[in-house]
Amino acid sequence: MPLQKEKGEATGALTVAVKAAEVFTKPRQEILELIAAQVAVKVDLGQAHEEINRLATIDGLTGLINHRTFQHGFDVMLVREERRAGALSLLLCDIDHFKKINDSYGHPFGDKVLKEVATILRKAARSVDLAGRYGGEEFVLVLEGSGEQGGLQMAERIRQEIEKMVLHHENGPVRITLSLGIAVYPGHGTNKERLIRRADQALYRAKKQGRNRVVLWEAE
Image (cartoon, rainbow, N blue to C red; front, side, top):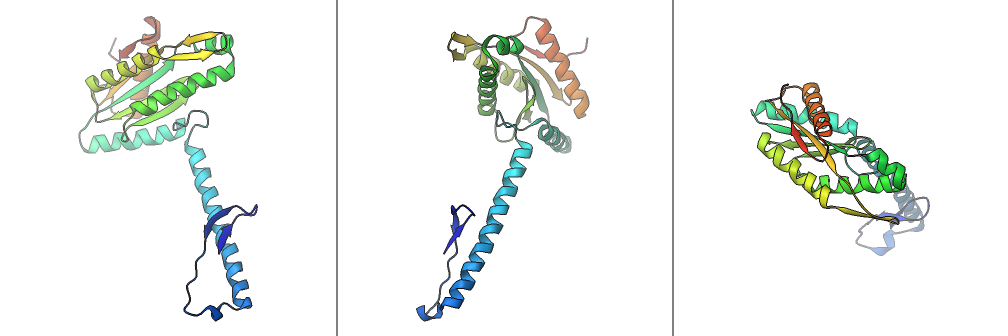
């Protein structure tokens, strides 16, 4: 017996096994149809709830986790690394001259740029890492169990992937670059706020030094 949504779309099936066909009298069949309809509503509500939860954690444009989910996930990762005396690298990434890209090629093309950068970050991240959209044209990547060397290698790999990428616009090919700042736990800080602040300071230095580069935080 099909489980159907209001519009008639099947979401599953209800199967009842009996030894004799005559057990399926019309009244009993009507009861089963009522049960199937109630089950279908429950299934539909459950799927809707799952989708609401997913949308609450995911950035709608890029498909990466959103800022709020990153903040929570970063907390969890810091606690885990503290317990096992491990390390992690925080990479803050910013698309260079993004406002100029939007102004020159339009916001739809700007959205395409954001999606392409997100795809590269998603592919670079391992299942244990955290890749998200930090806000606007900024992205974040947290590398579990990764110290300075691992963070630098990953950041440079991402920077090179972005640099060699060619996007196509009706006015011609477009190339973009990425600046990245890195802070490492525990060497550069042991709490979330300090690590984010120092990664942001490193990112600022990357911008100031000419963009399209990776900078590891260090005390001035």
